Length: 124
Image (cartoon, rainbow, N blue to C red; front, top):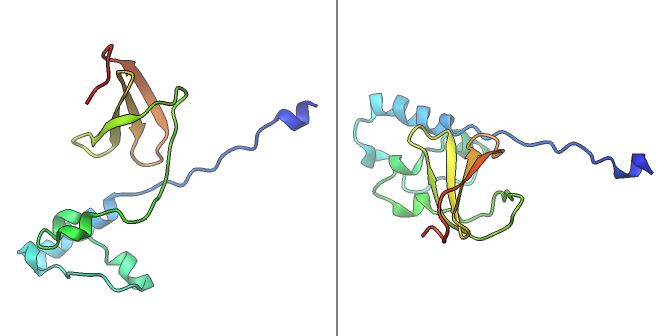
């Protein structure tokens, strides 16, 4: 019976957000103006390596739209998340929930780091 209740360990993929940012910094040396960035990226395997962050394509606002669901992470007490923002160093994600709690998530592997009861009502 004990063997049945053992859960398999979950393998989490680590997402490195630094690659596109470093490519943008490197490209700025040769293309100082951000408006020279390509409008659309071709759908090839090479295009993934050439991807730039949305800040590099300011002339094309659609480059920052997420059109594909990527991942969901759940806390122990499930409640709606009203607001999400990145910390200034872009290593953590801060989420404010409908029950007045702040939840801090790791930005690389989306592991839960900490939670704090901040308000008695929803944070909007």
